[in-house]
Length: 325
Image (cartoon, rainbow, N blue to C red; front, side, top):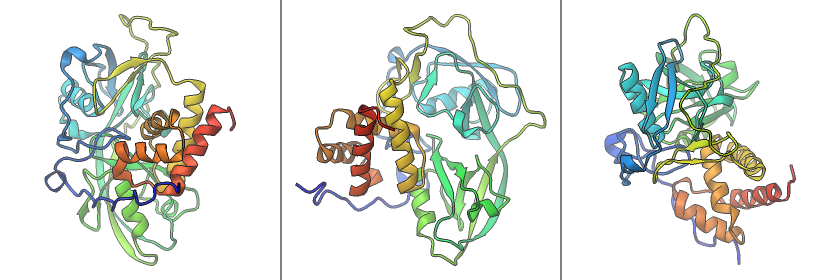
């Protein structure tokens, strides 16, 4: 039977803001919940959330704070806001064990039990005029899990690489005056891809606040945290259901997640390790590509993945199971 015959739905319109969206958005790789946190799924009861304590600092410099009792990325930002007396919306994204804007250390859906959290907050806002002189702009976009899409990678030699005002870590606030706050990363990437070649457009960007002196990386060791299993445990954050403590991904899972994340960048111009992990979970036990397609549509239908992408995901998971690549 052909893959996904007649299964495709019309992609949803761009979510421009909280009022028009009804609060869509959510943790990376999960539909639902926009900047206002209304995703149709209530937060898990406090009693079900792991009571783990993490140390945190503002990346541009601050005293050390403590956060605990959060079950997803949005709640983590709220706890960071409480710790430092700032609105949660000031937090753009977090990195683990380094205060630098290091996209390899970006906090996604998992936090190691010994990780130190650095929160990157809003810096200066800038307006940038860009000419789309090529079909591809050279941006890879990711999602902070709480309503902001930001730049994770700029391809060398691309249109954006020749635009010095644009940098890795910049949040995409608006396109030609149209708010992007609350839009998912794949929606922002789609809008940029659909701009006609030869057109000028304006981006409103907010860069992360930077310190004059770079703070040294922190290992993040903490007293009072019990040793779990091999010591490589992680707190898995989810937008649906409680956070869970689990072992680090297996070798198969790490290979598969990396492959699927590469496919997301190739097909959609986004990187999202938590989305990739969710797709690997859905595809691990799928009996064939059609079963994977049905699972993706059921859980991640907003992404409207094309059939050829689903075939490649199925192949990537199979390669990872066989230890190839």
